Image 1 (cartoon, rainbow, N blue to C red):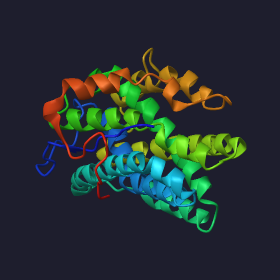
Image 2 (image 1 turned 180 degrees about the vertical axis):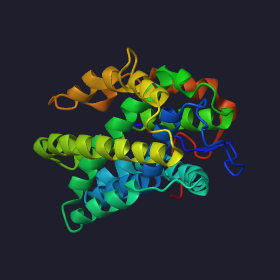
Image 3 (image 1 turned 45 degrees about the vertical axis):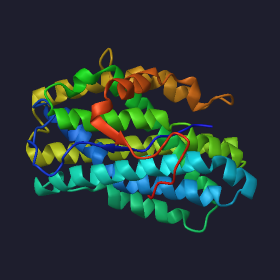
Length: 280
């Protein structure tokens, strides 16, 4: 069982930040902005998927998972709130979120379906966010030149994504979710997530007039395909999800634990590790 601490991030997202906030790098700025646009709806979807599935389990199983679920919901609700504030700044800059309406339309197709389908999608997406989180924690230089408060926001979020990466997967297994659908939804989520991420990134770049600049494409190649790039670094981790013996805990979370231990001034815990209730 995973003990999850809910933390209040000590940054102020009310003051505006620069349009090209990520070290004046157009691609990385547009890429991170696209990711952030997906989070408020996505985090709520994850919360609902966990709640809906846990409610179908026997009372003793619900009780045994209660504190972990409260921690998961508390962390995801905090992420949702922080990124909504960040996204409000993007909206003021004129950027338009096209990702969320597409995701909402797709997820409506699950209405009335077995809640384990939504949880399988959640587990798959959590694996993506955990891979991204561990990559970013290993390569914080990607955020070089960004305002300290924004560096803190992304690294804190990454640490907590790595910290709670087991929860949806474990509940899916406990609920008797099928292996066929687990891997099938992972394939579909791969196409949906990467497709939406790239479409929104391109839309952001086009809005800023940066899409066809050579520097933009060089940055994209370095961040995504370079020696330590996001895609190449995570290919093995992506492929492992299809193994019958896969579990998210097989991937080391040491960088997340280190960041949290080395940056206590960045946040305030609002629940004890033993699990006081947290409102979502």
